[in-house]
Image 1: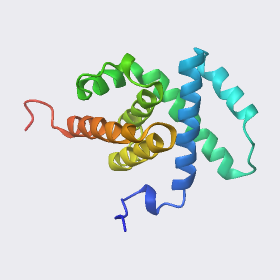
Image 2 (image 1 turned 180 degrees about the vertical axis):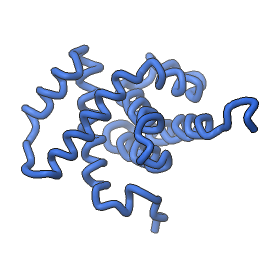
Image 3 (image 1 turned 90 degrees about the horizontal axis):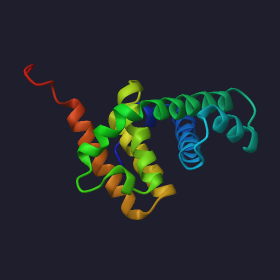
Length: 159
């Protein structure tokens, strides 16, 4: 049995957040491939999707849109962190879906403090297993663990 991580796993809203991440990744993919404004992507995504009733659907939508919009706007800050940890791989050479999974997780590292970084990594690996190749999960895990370690380091001169 896998150990339970603090935060999301024990939270009944974790399923909602997982579905929100999946929706955010799908919106980011459409945004990246179609080169459409994120607002247009989000509107068409929900129009084409199967609407769910109630508060859960509203929470999924709000979380997904926050992640997709935030990730798309944070790329100038996120990409250098990914590039620094992905030796021999330029972002342009990565599979689109892998690059977007990495961006989404690093955005969560930086801007979603209620999500423990270990949970963000676990969820990114889950996304890679679901939407990419078996090798992608190991790659995503390795890059994100490197980014996490770098972000957890104290700034130079403060140790």
